[in-house]
Image 1: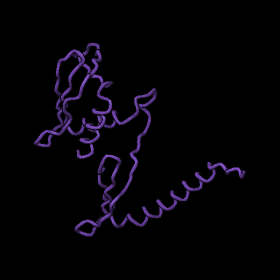
Image 2 (image 1 turned 90 degrees about the vertical axis):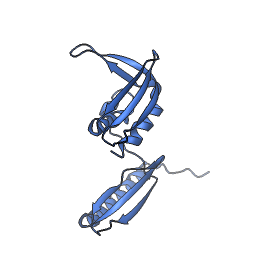
Image 3 (image 1 turned 45 degrees about the vertical axis):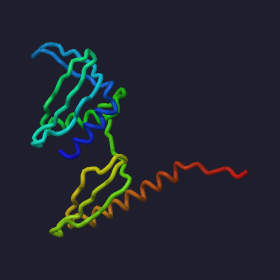
Length: 158
């Protein structure tokens, strides 16, 4: 639930002028209505739902209450680029830093990554899986360096 809040807020603010709200009758055709402004996109105080308040192009204001499960689906969909075929693309977040600590019981490593706009969802890696993870990371780092070396063009000497 923690990850959905910044994603919903960020996406809503960034693409607020191009988001569509859909209204329609049960079983009838749904006609998209352009959203002109995102007024609010935050969790409810009780933590059981998210509230999204929108102002439509017509000036009408609408409010939606979204369960955490459905908010995750919305965040996933809105985090993809709005281009042809975007719904099939997978999106990754760049990590600009990370802190690593051992949990209070000594059972897991807690990785707390930081993105461009703040902290991302922490990950807990059981200590039993930490060494295999490090081995795989080292393997993938070497693979990435090899690919980058092949792609680099040699510079011409003057």
